[in-house]
Structure formats: structure tokens, C-alpha cells
Length: 227
Ligand SMILES: [Zn+2]
Image (cartoon, rainbow, N blue to C red; front, top):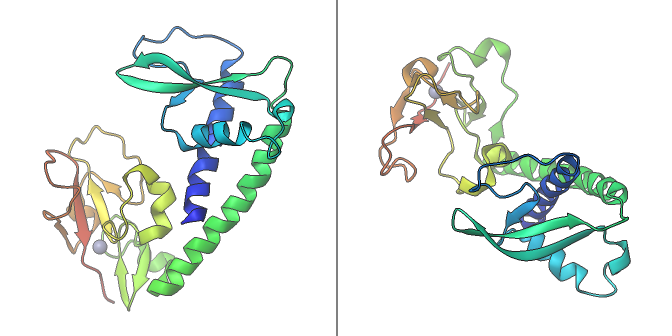
């Protein structure tokens, strides 16, 4: 659990730093409802975390911290933000280097977590090319208890899926039907415009919590394939 929170926080911090470095150079006039790129949402964990760390003498001396974070009264689209600025005369070089170091460690933790999940659930993901497209034009991505499956592979895909919408277990063997054929598919691995072509043994999961109240883009479940 602690690792997960740390992963989220570090990911956000990376985004923040890359935003600061890229927006210093030129100022673009955006529509008023979009906050400047160095603004982060008021409940951003990394921002809150950085604020608390920076205010704690001894953990990170103020003079070594190159960025300022403060809550701002400005609202965009009804939402409040924290504002990040680079302190005068400070460089982001060391912070970026340190973040890269942490990122490597986080990537390692992520790999460990994925490997553990696969062992626990008896999931194989090394699918031979000759089998990958035997059951539709979607890729077979996992094998569990002798059956091959299309779609999302549990927590293995959590980070690629996006933490915001992730709910444990409900997406296993599921793939997403984009009903508008003009919509670009964000995840080629589990998105399709034609569910029946994607997997030849699937059903529209009407009871899936993410399908309720939806009028477009429905989750399907692969029932598995045997050879
Ligand atoms: Zn399938």
C-alpha cells in the first residue's frame, strides 16, 4: 500500500517538474478555463507532500529546495489549484537527477509487484506468436488455468490503464468497445471498434460497474479460449 502511494506521488512529481521546465521558456495564451501548466490540483498528493516536507526543517533544508509550492485563490472551471514556481537563482538539475534515480527504483518495485501478481494468480503472459491471433484480431495476452484470454491482465496492466479509474479485479479479461469508429483507440491491447472481430468468445458485460449508465464505449469480457 505504501509503495502504491509512493508510486503515485513520484509519478505526479515527475509530471510537475517536466511542466515547470517546459513552460519557463514561453508563455502561451490558453483559454481562461484551463489553468497555467505549472498549476496542479489542490488535492494533488505530491504537492501536499512536498509542502509538508519543505516545511519540516531537517528533512529537506529550505535552501536546497528549488521550487515553491503555494495554494492559489485562482479557480479554473470551479477547481482550486496549487501553484509551482522555480525559486530565483535555483536550478532544477539536481532535483531532476534525483527524480530519475527514484524513478529507476520505482520501476523496479513496479516490476516486482507485477511478477508477484502473476505468480499469485498463476498467470502466464509469454504467449507464442502462433497463438496470439488464433481467436480474433485482438491479441491474446494471458493464459490462466489452461485457457487463453484477451483483454486486461489484472494488476499487471494497472499502471498502463491509469490509476484514476482502476478498481481491483473488475477489469480482468475485459476489453473496451469504442462505438464511434472514428475515435482513436488509446490502448491497442484492449480497445476495439469491433468486439466480435476482436474476440470470438466474448459477451457484453452488462453488469460491469463501468457499463452502468453508459451510452457508448462498453466493456466486454473474454470467456477464454482453449486449444
Ligand atoms: Zn477472447
